[in-house]
Amino acid sequence: MKNTKEIIKKLASEATPVKPVKPTARCFIWCVFAIMCVGVAWAFIGIRHDFAAKIASGMFIVEISLALFAGVLSALAASWLSIPGCIRQNWLIWLPFIPITMLVFLIGYQVFESPSHLLEAGKSIHCATDVLMVAAVPAVALFVMLKFAASTRNMITSIMAVTAVAAFGYLGSRFICPNDDISHVIVWHYLPAVIIAVVGAVVGKKILKW
Amino acid sequence: MALAQQGDKKSYAAFLEEAARMIRSYIRRKINTKEDVEDVTQEVLLSIHRARKTYDPKRPVKPWILAIATYRINDYLRKHYRISGREVFGHDALNTISSDSDVTSTSDKSESLIKALDSLPEKQRKIITMMKIEGHSVKDIAKHFGMSVSAVKVSAHRSYKKLKNIMK
Image (cartoon, rainbow over all chains, first blue to last red; front, side, top):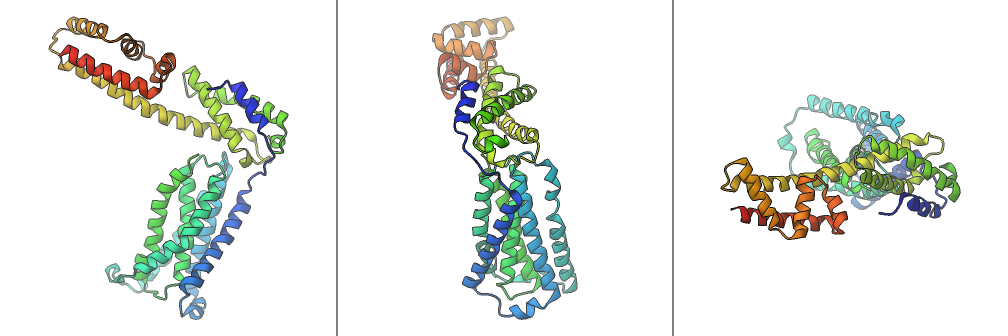
C-alpha cells in the first residue's frame, strides 16, 4: 500500500466542494416521496369503497396516525443514524417504539373486543402483496438515500429504515383493503409488515456496508 | 474540515495530517501490528474522504472521525479473525500429522518432523518455518515472498499434505 503522506496528498488534491448532508431535511423529502408512492399505489390498485365512512371512524384514524408516526419517526432515526458519530441523537432510536407499542396495544384491544381466531383469517394473499408493493419503491429510495450517507451502525440503521418502510406499507394497504376483521388485519396486513421489517433488516445491513 | 468541505485543498491536507495522527494513536490501542496500524489508518483516511459530506460543521469533529475509525477497525478485526480462523485449520493439520504418525516419544516426533521439513522444497520449508515456528502472519509471509495471501495458504496446505505423507 502507498505511503500515508502520499494518500493524504492525493485525497487533498481531490477535495471538491461538498454540501453537508442534512438528515432531517432528507427524512422530510423521503416522507413526502413515500406518501406520494402510497398515493400512486392507491391510484393503481384502487382505494377501499368505504373510504369516506372509515375516515370518520376514530379508531381507524388513530390506527393510521400511529402507523404514519411510526414510519416518520423511524425514517428520522434512520437518517440520523446514517451520519457517523451522531451519538447525541441516540434517543431517536426509541421514538418509533412509542407509536409501534401503541399500535400493538390498539390491535390487542380490538382482538379483546371482538375475539376471533387467527386461523379464520381466510386467504387474502393479495393484501400481503399490497403491503409489499406499497413498501417497495420507498424502500429502494430510503436505502439509496442512506447509502449516500455513511452509516457506521448498519444493523440499527437498517432496522429503523425497514420499520419506516413497513409502516408505510401497512398504512397504504389499510386504505386499499375494505376488510377490517381484526384476524384479517393481523394476518394479512400487520404480519407481512413485520416480516418485511425482519427480512429487510438483515438484508439492509449488508446493503448499507461501505 | 468545514473549509475542506468548501474545497480548500490546503486546509483539507492539514486536517487529514492532524486526523491521521489522532487515528494512528487510537488504532494503536486496538491493533498491535505496526504495518496493520498504518494500513487501517490509511483505510480510515479514505473513508473520511468518502464520507466528508456527512460531517456537520456545527458539531465537534472528533466523534465523527472516531466513529469512522471504529467502523474500519471492526472491519479489520472481522477480516483478521476470519483469516486466523482459517489458520487454525493449519494448526489442526499439523496436529493431525503428529497424532497420525507412528512415532511414540516426543523427541522422535520432533526429529522426524525436522527430517520431513528438510525434505520439503526450500520455499515451502521457509513458509512453514515462518508460519509455525517464527509465528509470522500469512500476510507478512505473503509480503516477504511477494506472493498473494491465498498463494501462501495453498503452499502451506500442500506442505502439510507432504509432511503427513512423509511421516506416515
